[in-house]
Each structure stands twice: as C-alpha cells, then as structure tokens.
Image: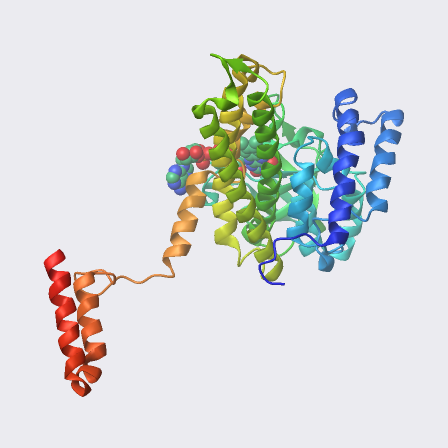
Length: 426
Ligand SMILES: Cc1cc2nc3c(=O)[nH]c(=O)nc-3n(C[C@H](O)[C@H](O)[C@H](O)COP(=O)(O)OP(=O)(O)OC[C@H]3O[C@@H](n4cnc5c(N)ncnc54)[C@H](O)[C@@H]3O)c2cc1C
C-alpha cells in the first residue's frame, strides 16, 4: 500500500532476530575482544565465524549489495531498517559484512569490476579474507577534486602511480587500496613497493605513492572514470552512515530519557523540569524527522537510483550531522558530569558529530549541491513582483471572473462589495 509506514511482518521477524542477536551476542564479544573481526588469533576468529555463520543462515550477510551486483537484493529501505539496529553496536556492521570502508569499495568492484577482478578482490572482501581502504583525499585539499594531483602513468604493461593521499581510513591495515588518480581508479596492494604509509595520523593514514608499479589490469572501470566511480561509492556510503546515525541518536535519546527519570534535583525528578522536557521533546522530534528523511531517501534510491536521489542523499548527509550534534549534546548535558567522561558512549558520540560533518564531504559542499540542484526547478519571476504578490493575483482573479461578471452583473456587484470591504480592512 502506498504511504504505508509498516514493516513487512517477515522482515520484522528478521529485525527482531537481529535486535536480540546484537544485544546478546555481538555486544558482549565487542566488550571482551575489541576489533575481533580483524583479529588473526584462531580462537577469536572461531568466535567471529560462529556469529557470522548465524548471520549468513538468516540470509542477512552483505545485504548492502543489490541483486544485480550479486547481493541478496533487499534494497536500501530494508538496509535502513537493519542499520537502525546495527548502528547501536560498534562491531555489528562488520559482523554482518556491511562495514565501511569495505562496503563502498565492494560496491565499486561489483559495479565496475571485470569478472577476473571480482574473483580476485570482491569475493575475498565479501568473505572478509581481505580488507580494503579508499585513498582519495589529498593533503592540499579534500573538498575540491579538481585539486587532486595523484596520477598513473602507463609504462609498458604497467601503471606507475605517483602522488600523495591524506586520511585514508584504515589504510595501514588494508590489504588493498583503492587509489583515485586524476586519470582513473586503481587497485593497489598495500605491500607494493613505493606505498609509503606515514607514521601519523594513526587511523586515517597519510600515504605517499612513490613510483608505485601495478599491472595494467589493476585499473578499475574506464580510464578517466574516477569521478564517476567515486560518486557511486560515496553516494551509497553517505546514506549508510545516515542509517547508522539514526541508531546512534536513538541510543543517546534512550540514555537521556532513562537518566531524566532517574535523577533528582531541587525537589523534583529532573524530567519534571521544563528545560529538561524541552531537550527531550526537541530530540524526539529531530530523530523522527531524520529517520523519515533517511528512510524516504532509501526508498527513493530503491525506486530510482543513487544518482537520481542525489539531492536528498546530500541533504540527509548534513542533516544527520546536525541532528547527531544536537541530540548527543542534549543527552550528554542531561547526564551531567558523567556525560563528560568516557564511561558512557555519549562523549564519543558528541565528539563524532563534527567529524560526521566533514567525512564523505564537508557540509558546506553538500549544502551548495542541494541548493544548486533545487534551484534548477525554479525560474526567476518576470518584472518587479514575485508570483505570490497579492495585487497581481487579485488582478488576475478579476480577469478570470470577467466572463461570469458579464453574464451576471449582480455577481459583479457582490464582488465589488467584497473588494471594498477587504480594502477597508487593509
Ligand atoms: C573520519 C574521517 C574519515 C575519512 N576517511 C577518508 C577515507 O577513507 N579516504 C579518503 O580519501 N578521505 C577520507 N576522509 C577525508 C574527507 O573526505 C575530507 O576530510 C573531506 O573531503 C574534506 O576535505 P579536507 O579535510 O581537506 O577539508 P577542506 O577541503 O580543507 O575543507 C575545510 C573547510 O573549508 C570550508 N570549505 C571547503 N570547501 C568549501 C566550499 N565549497 N564551500 C564552503 N566552504 C568550504 C569548510 O568549512 C570546510 O570544512 C575522511 C575524513 C574523516 C573526517
């Protein structure tokens, strides 16, 4: 049914399973064995495999991939509903084979890779036998891809890459790097001579590509196609971040409400103070709005394409950062001193809000994109006055009625009376 906001009962059953699976199995594993998914320790790997096998048995593995790309084809809306749960648990996306930055890279491979490239990289990435990173941003400026300089030169049967990349997340731990060059997207094994990972920053790496030689078939997609591939990768990634952000905002909200009902001050439970109520009410409305916007955008992607839903994806991107900032601030504030410590998720959540406004493109650039695209649907008005200028509208309405006035002079007299009355009120 159109405009039906309910989840199909069969999928709701899966979501219920995911909820208890995450709470009962994924979360405890994350507390005792942090980063378990990337561990090489056989005993930890066995624990992870057991959980991942349960996910696969539910047919929920790597559900970000559409059917035509070899995935189960649930679509973005269902992925949104799933991510609303996974986003609450830091290690859950990896447990479901749906964690960044691998997801976006796999999507590029699935969409643009040759059969041979898919076999070499996509299958092991899907099975988490391999991990990847995405090397696009450069030190001289990230927001404007026209400033990028990293270039691949053909030399015999090889490509030789020279350039410098900044903030490649998890580059140090990746097996392969997707390197955006001015003349194409390339897959570079991290241990290739000339890949020089700088000591700082630790998690988002500064990498110098110094005469890095890779075989000819490591070009992904067409030559000069890097920007198209990057758009495809980042579009999907942004909406996935937003889905998980709904989960994080909801977690902050739950913590805020629990605390508001638990603390007392100046003779009242703090939830009875109006300024606390305002924070709860505002946060509630912001999360509802974000959630609907995210799910509607996911639905649009399912019914059109990432490209066609671009305006809304960009708008969701800066909206989620703002809602996360405000809701996590409200929750942290209501938590008082405890909120400022690292003993709850709130401090990290609040600190991550500005990061969300920068990662995957700064808010300003997305806002400019939205305004530019929205304005394409409008035209300037003619003459001095806007379309909704009342005197012009009245004049046009009078013209509309002229034939009736001619046929019925009494009606004209009534209209004149109305006009005189309305003029006397102005
Ligand atoms: C957590 C995190 C993970 C990341 N992971 C990766 C990764 O895996 N791979 C990768 O390649 N990159 C990654 N990035 C980098 C990210 O893509 C860039 O940070 C982003 O594109 C902005 O580039 P910049 O940092 O150089 O900022 P700049 O481009 O220097 O922008 C700085 C500021 O200038 C202003 N500004 C810039 N352009 C405009 C404009 N057009 N209009 C108005 N104001 C403007 C804004 O205030 C902006 O915040 C990551 C970033 C973060 C924070």
